[in-house]
Amino acid sequence: MSTDIERAESLKNEGNLFLKQNHFEEALAKYTQAIEINSSNAIYYANRAQVQIKLENYGSAIKDSTKAVLRDPNYLKGYYRRAVALSNVFKYKESIADLNLILMKKPNDNLSINLKNDLNKLLRKIAFEKAIEVEEEDIFKDIQFENFKIDENYNGPLLDIKILKEPFDLEFTNLNHEWILKLVEYFKSVKSGGLIPKRYLYAIFIKINKILESEPVFKEISMDEKKIDNENKFTIVGDVHGQFYDLINYFETNGYPSINHSYLFNGDFVDRGSWSAEVIILLFFLKILYPNNLHLNRGNHESIDMNKMYGFEDEIKYKYGEASYKYFTQLFIKLPLLTLLNNQWLIMHGGLFSKPDIKLIDLKKSLNKLKNPKEGLEMELLWTDPQDENGYGISKRGIGIQFGPDITESFCKLNNLKGCIRSHEVRMEGYSKQHNDRLITIFSAPNYCDSTGNKGALINVKYENNETELDFIQYDAVEHPAIKPMAYTTSRMI
Image (cartoon, rainbow, N blue to C red; front, side, top):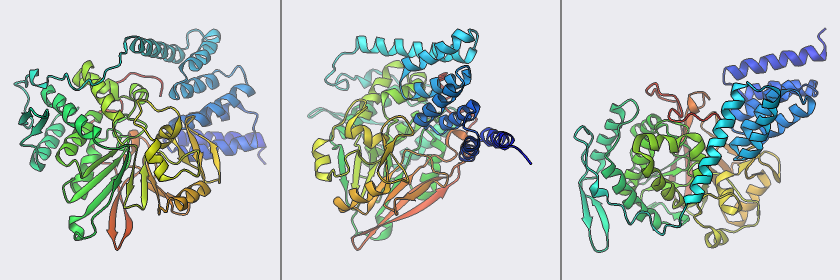
């Protein structure tokens, strides 16, 4: 008969195997079972912390790694796990403190040396950017896009741009569905994604800025049920995360955006995937072509902190140069934060609020488009997550809160909603229904980071007799060129 210690070790070994296979939920369960048998073993907590890091549950990872070092103050891997998790919730100095503890005992630890160097470099960069930061009323008004020449080697679709003087605006006279298809084929023709001329890129900045400035932080959309079904399509897309080839698969099978087929992208268009530039440029062109049919909610990855860490900043600077990146950051600030569909479903990237009795009319009055929301309603819309238990809980991410079924039920009843649709979390089936079907999570990046093995999903919305119905379409990941996620960054903070 095996002892408790032997059974716990066996469970740990099973967890290790699941972790190597990227079966994170199964690994989490095995480590938890091992801890339930033997709660004094630091290794079990550190291993579970590693799974939480893989699941991006950095708050939970900090808790587990702290428990590891409390049980064994000499177990250096526990400090390293905590340092990684802390760095991912922007607590860079606390992370460095843990790394210093490791390096006092093991001065040649390469992982700790490299991560500490990355963090110090990032802190210097942040300090430098803050020192030179100036309040710019409008960085878009001085763009001289016509000064950029089109490279003679460019073989993508040509864009005719007409300058309107009074008031100043740009018109893309030949931008249509066929042009979009040519752009897609051009992007696909180059392994790393084809580059558009900077003349076009900066023209996009000018045009998209005007469009987004005219949109409220809280959008309201009503589908026209007078149209016949095939002229009244509406699709909701969750996190895309730079997975360009999966995005194109959605369009090719579910239909491209058009005046008869609206799309709402629910944030996290960029980061992680190595075609984030192609994804956001395509979405911006579609937004210009169909401003009333292509809708973009902001996600937590449409922010400066996340873009520094998860690849978008480095990718843009590599593909289009240092100067272009600041325009993307300013455009992300101007994105709406939430959308009300048919007065029945509220759509946001993250989730609900720490104030359970907030009304939609109050949200309309109080929400603002902020640069880098780290507190308040704006942060909660981008960051919060659901939980199975009633009430509120501490965030497993280390940012925001968690809210239970009773919170969702109360909010929906108060505001006469059928429910809420959010994204923000991987779902193995591409979507989930929680909180008595009042809360939908939609995630549209299949095989996230080329490792998770999840499906992606879309929601096709039907509206008839004043009723909104949701139809879920699941997708497997499609093949893409052999370029790894975050190929343009060397960060060791993830």
